Every structure is written in structure tokens, then in C-alpha cells.
Image (tube, rainbow over all chains, first blue to last red; front, side):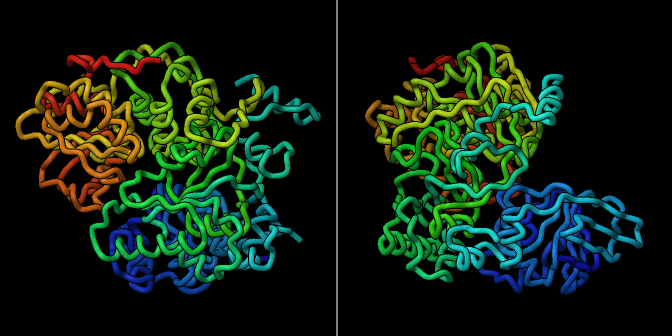
Length: 165
Length: 443
């Protein structure tokens, strides 16, 4: 599987509960949060991110008690994948469980708006215009199977005993 | 460190390497084979928990799946603790939905006032040594005090557990922390964790499991051990697991838990880091305003005035915490102008404290006691909003700006003994300098 899209950058240590959830915006729905997502840490992010783009985040995206809603919103905005050198633990689970490919990878050198290609079978992240070629370990087959089914619940509805191909 | 390199080489040539507690528990729950850090496993979960701050999301996921396919729902507890009692109709409606769901499907229910999830799960006998337990809360690490792998997850995860009894996990690396010697009177597990936060930084153990061991851990009562495992969440730990001993077995038996499967690390287990602490040299610690890893000795912040003193939460709202406070405040009055609120971690803790006369002693001293629940931790219940410029000393676990509903106030974090000593004087105070501050449980 390959994903190709433009890089949309976020800084390090972003608390997604604060910057992309309605935890502090009671009553506001996902569409509202999506319009304002990450505005304080990356002004203009919501309008820059187009369907098919790849979020390139600094380390610790989604630290602390990251809400699942954040990944729902990222998918609603059209993010095709997210790359980060070290994910907050719960954010990583949420991404996989909701069908958003999450790749642990050094992001240095990847510039805003440049094209990035992730090749899951070759285990590579390439941003040719930036001269970035990184090798990443292939995703474990359990995670690949969940992503292929578009999320954990959909996977379990077809594989109630977690059987892998 | 050299031995780790050696082990790596051995492994390359086919030699066996020992396992950490985390590797053993995850291995035993995923087919019984040896698993190593970095691997992804599908593991059988012994018990799951959903609390009211995350239930709406979980019930939405479950609603989409359909009700008939939840064979493991009876091994799931729904806990109404974050909004206990509910401050608005939205929270009350979530509670109604949780009660209805538990009634319809047979999930275990803990209602308003029963207590905080991390207290009622062990008290209810729902977990034992060697278990794998998940909860929709970062402080689900608490179960490590009972030699269980406890970790925080989200709504989709617990839904998967209710459907299949299993969940995927990335096997984590571990850090071994040995507390040598014994803690001084007036120094508690809280102070150990604050010291670790100052040393490693918040998230300093992200993704990792902390194994706490050593004579100072063995000397701790279960209440303090629960603080040690619980508060590791602030270090970013995925779990914080202690080895089991006679105290663990006795406590679990008294609370009706299943037969324990005690799980210890191998002597040649591989750790990413080993830390040794001389427990006797550790003075009481405090986290300064807004940042949990901005840590100092309590003596260093002498003279810092306070307005509010809070004892409670899943970190430090247990019987030994309330005993510490009562040992300091019995027969005395808190400082003029200071408000002190105590929220016991559970209904049982509340009852035990009442039977021991601690509630009376604290009330006579000028403290107010509120319903068991998460009330003193975060301003969700709305009964604890701070005023502009006010300074809070709290036994809670987090002190983000605005956590008590007002970004113009500040929260400092310390042990229950430090909070009570500070309530007594009106200034952040080292418990070793006040009468009763040296109290320790009889073991």
C-alpha cells in the first residue's frame, strides 16, 4: 500500500484534547472543531489541510489523555495518514483503531506543502523535493489488518476472533 | 548497561533473555509464549472499565455495533465518578444512559458516590496479580500496585473488549526503579513520584512500563503503593507494576479477588533504564504552579501562602491520606482564611474514615468533606472553582493552568501530609516540621 499527499506540519508536544476536541468547547460538534483545529499552535492549519494530505507532527502528538474524537476530526478533514517521531501512546491507539495510518518516523527536513510518499510494503517515507528518504519498520500485521478494514470495530465485525489472514 | 549489550549479543546467537513483568503478563495473555518489547500482540483482557467522562463515546461505538454481540460485558465496570454528583443535565443524562446500559447488558455499575474507578475496581475484587486490565482513563496504571498490568485506553478499545474479550497491545519497554533503604516519616509515595517527575520530566517514561522495587516499596502499605502506580501516569507510563508480596495477597483476599497469579521479572530481564534512589535521603516534594515536573523540596518553597487545601482524587484520597491529615489536624484549627476540602476516594474509604473518627476530627478542624468521587481533581463537578489569584495546595495528580476552572488561579501539588500541614499554617509547610506530620501506618 502506498499513500501520497502534501505535508501539513504541526509542532511538537501538541495536546490534542486542547487543540482538536470539544473537551473545552462543550456542545460544539466535530465540524465546528475541524474548522478551528490546531489554530493556536499552527495558524491556518485547518484551511491548508486538504483531503489526501499527510499530517507531519513533531514528537509527542496527543500526549496525556488524547480523546478519540481528535482522530475522527482528522479523518473528517481528509487526512490520509500521520507521521510523527514519537506518538503520545493513546493517540497512536486511537489513530489505528479509527483507520488513520500512523507512522513513527524522523520528520526532520520535511517542509510544509511538499509531497510525501509512504510505502507501507517497502517501509519507506520519501519527500523527494526535500531530499528526505527514510526507512521505517513495516507496520505489524495486526495493525495492517485493522487499517485495511478501516478501523478496529469494522475489523472485529468481520474477524470476531481476531483471526489474521 | 554493559550487561544489556551482552544480553543483546547472546540473543543474536540464540541465547535466551529474561522477561520483564510486562512481557510476562502480556505473553501469558496472548498464547503463553515469550513476547518481547516492540512486538504487537492480541491479548486476553481480564477486566475493563469505562467512566462517565468517556462513556458517551464508548456507548456510541457500542450502539453502532449492535447489542447482541457483547459476550464480555459482564467483565466491564461502568463507573460514575468524574461527574459525581452531576453538575448539569448533560452529565446527568450520560449517567442515565450508563445505568440503562449496565441494567440491560449486565455490566457492573458503580453509581454516584460509590467512588473513583481506580479505587472501586480493586475494592470490588475485580482484579488480581498477573491480570491484564484496561480502563478509559490514563490513571488505570493504578492496578499495577496489585501486580496487574493496568493501562489506559479509549472507547473503541473497551468496546472491542466487550465484544471479544481481547485487545491489541504493543509490548512496551520497561524501566526498573529501585527504592533503596526506607522513606523518612512524613515522606510518601507522592514525594517519590514528584522526585521522579523532576528527574525524568512529564512524559519522561512515555510508552514505557515502570517496575518499582526495593525495600522502601516493600515497606509501603497498599494505599501508598497505589499512589506509586497511579501517579506514574504523569510520567507518561503505560503501566507501573509492583511485585506482589504477603501484603498484596492479604489485601486482595480481604476484598474477594480471584486467586493471584504473582508475576515477577527475571533477574536477567532487559530494561531500557535502571534507576536507583536512596529513599532515606528524599525530603517531601512539591510541584510548583502549572507544571507537574517543576519540582522542588517543600522546604525550598517555604513562605508560599495558600488559600485552598485539597485532599482527594485517585492519587491521594485513600484512608492513609485521610489519616495523615487527621494526625496533623486533630484537636487543632486550619489557618484563618484557608478553605479545606476532602473527597474520600470511595464510599468505603469515607465509611472507614468516619468509623475511625477522622471525618469528625477534620470537620472540627474546619475542613469540609464532599461526596466520594473525582471532585477535588478537576472542576467538572463545578463545586470547587477557584477565585482569581488564589493558590491551591492539592494532593491531586495534575496542576495544568485552569484545571480548577480558573486560569488566574494556581495549583501546587504535594502529599496529603504536606497539604494538611499547609492548611494548618496557611503556608506550604514541610510535614516534618509540624506535630503529627511524622505519622506512619502500623505495619
